[in-house]
Length: 215
Image (cartoon, rainbow, N blue to C red; front, side, top):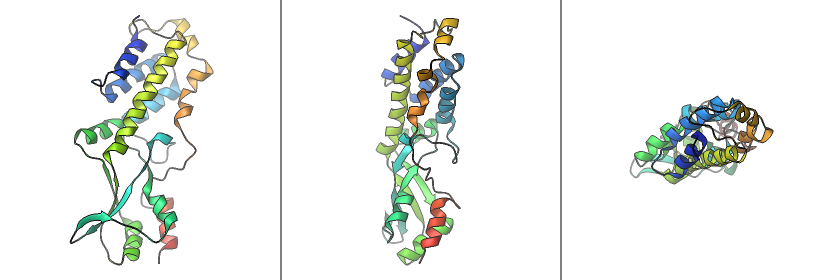
C-alpha cells in the first residue's frame, strides 16, 4: 500500500525523520483535504502560537523560578505567596517546534526572563534587587515534540481507517468527501484543554496579581 498518508505514518515511526519535516508533510495532506482546523494547528506548531491564542494543553509546563545571586549564580527562589508562585511557574509555551527542536539539539531547555513589575515585586519579597527568570527543563520541552509526533501518527491512522490514503500526492474526490466526517474535521479539538494561558509578559494577569499582592 502506498500513498502520502502511509508515508506520514512511516515517518512518524522513524526517529530519523525530524518533527518539522513531519509537520510539513501533514500540512500538505490537510491542505489537500481542506481540513482547515488541522491546517491551522500545524501552522501554529511550525510558526509558533500567538500569546493570546488558544494554546494546546500539552504545551502547559512547569517552570522553576530562579534569581541571580551575585555570589552563587542562579539559584531557586521561593516567595511567600503560593498562588502567585503557581501562576508564575505554570506556563504555556508559544515557541514553534523548529525553535524547540533547535534548543534540544543544543542540549538546552528554555529560559524566560522576568522583568518589569514582576521583577520589582519579587525583589521586594526576596529583600534585594536582582534578575529573575523561569527555567523550563530539556525533558519537559522534549515531551511537547513527542506529543506532536503522536498526534500526527494518530491522525494519519484515523485517515487510513476512513479509507483516506492518497495516491502519491493526490486524493480522489471520494477521499476528500470522506474527510468531511465530523470526527476528522474536529480532530484537533482533542488537543486543547480548559486551562488559562499563563504566559508571563509585562502587563499580564500574573503581573497584575503580583502588583496587587506586593508588600
